Image (cartoon, rainbow, N blue to C red):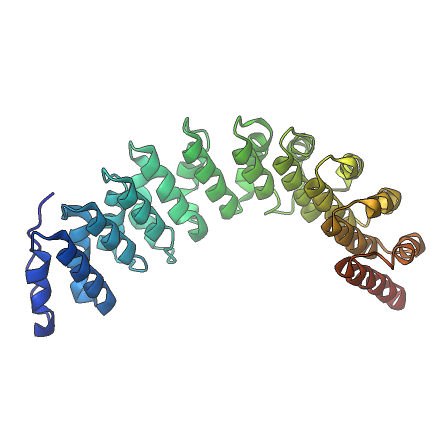
Length: 330
């Protein structure tokens, strides 16, 4: 890679020395120059940062420039960072991907859309991550294509981006992925994404039940939480069974969702979990009983009001207050 930093027309004379520094053979001098140029935060100096990302011979200078382009969303900067995703050095590629992930303006997705057809999987995955929170609905079909990509990294970012779109047209695809993808993390992402739209179809119920009983405990956690967010009463019984899950992390998610479902049938099982060693689980049980309400739940909470953990006792008081509030309202 060459130097040949360009002469910029009509810039303040105070910046003239930067050009001399940028064309020095010593990469450390160029590194400091790029740092100082970035600190100026002047649009008229952007061309030097952009040139550094793509043309400086030192990877550490290209990395710095890519990092300092974060926050600039003009078309040239966006395309510069997108091209840097193919840099031969990983540190530069990673810096460019990170800067792109911070874009905020919806119109930036239009500039980056063409890179979703790139031959490099890292480029595609990075662009998907960059546009994820922009909710680029015009790119829905392209995103949908990538959820079946051969590369798990691309699939994961495509599924996450599809979740952010929150389009009902994508729910059937998410349900299929949540149940059938070979990658556990991708299944977990899709399972969580099913909560974005308050709809429960047979396919969604099947996917959630499958995830709730999956081998990976992280997937069971996600399914339990999603069931609660959707208030899927059809899965109350499978959810109840998971209060015996060997992983306390799963039981916490299950207790939380049973509380949201106001599951009277869960009271006895929740009481059993007051004997668990993990205080965070006992805290969640207390809140769940408060959400469920009624005399039985209140009785259980009073039985355990002297729990040895002060945080659990606090949660029990909160649970009792929730029950009293419901009684007052009624």
